[in-house]
Image (spheres, one colour):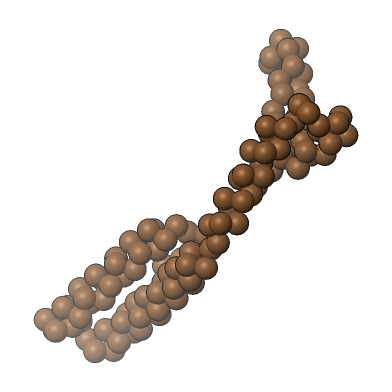
Length: 127
């Protein structure tokens, strides 16, 4: 089981449920005497470590979600809308500064594949 950063919470919860089912099946094999005690304990320890790591990661993500400040996000979006609404009224320098806040880069490409017609790709900043 690979612990990965930035996994969605639902994926982690699905992985946790899967590992818990494996632990139950492992116990069933041991109780049915299809698995010796040493093998059972080794496999059980690996599953317990994985389950513990998943629970820890889920706890961290849930804690981050609970501590998120939605009002800060609303304020940020409101500020952006206000900038857009007043953009035409701004001085040229202020318009340039505003665009630099929301655009990371603009890539201008002219190739034989596009019959020397220019293509423009705008890469937006994360807000």
